[in-house]
Amino acid sequence: MSASTRKTALTAEDIRAMKGQSPIVSLTAYTTPMAQLMDDHCDFVLVGDSVGMVLHGLPSTLGVTMDMMVMHGAAVARGLKRAMMVIDMPFGSYEQGPEQAFANAARLMAETGAAAVKLEGGVEMADTIRFLVKRGIPVMAHIGLTPQSINTLGGYKVQGRDEAAKPLISDARAVTDAGAFAVVLEKVPANLADQVTEIIDIPTIGIGASVGCDGQVLVVDDMLGFFGAFKPKFVKRYAELGPAAEEAIAEYAAEVRARAFPGEEHIFADHAPKKD
Ligand code: KIV
Image (cartoon, rainbow, N blue to C red):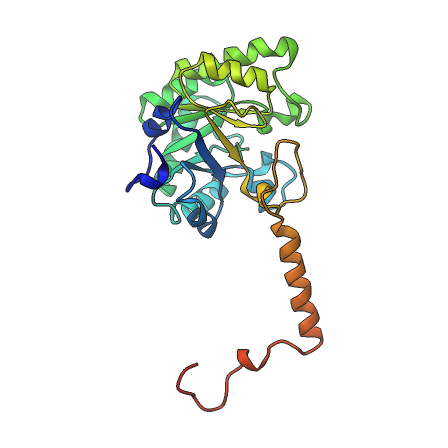
């Protein structure tokens, strides 16, 4: 089923049912206009905590707050009609235990209209995922490179190589058994991503994983060439809008300094013409 043939928003069940049918398309979004551009093309839109780095200039996702997620989530929801909206639980909002996770997930869903939450972690988060799902909150899991744990992972490294493959498979099984409807695999070897996709019966959503995953997600500002701070190998630049925007800004600045802007067509006469 493709997002563009649906009249109402896709649900977690719809996304889950796409496994083995058609590739699931997803991007992150943080604002209404960007969400509007994606609505016809994405099956789900992720309000990622990458917003902290992409829009707020933070050095990592660790400083992202619940209030930031609520504000950006509500903005994205206003731009979506068809695509499902998934929202990230920020660092510190769920790790204490299932009750804390439920309170914050319920707030994210109630105040933004998100249809599901995403949280990072595998085996260690299984009880929390089970608790949320049993209480009506669809959960997307996120394993492999989990950016909220960079301080314990030692940086943004590939996860699951060599002897680390087994624990990653255990994570995938654990989140599946706990009731997650899909799982993001970030920065894991392609063969391992294919193996996980084969083993578990929920969709795998790859980012720096494998073309064989059930779906793909990218940070929109990365793929549009807006966000230059990071250029991970797994990002394909589909456009270079950052340099194009800077060129336009430089042209505007030059025209203002040369008193070439505003032109005749941008200013108003003393007396009203037929049409302004
Ligand atoms: O926050 C985010 O953008 C994400 C994606 C990288 C999957 O979690």
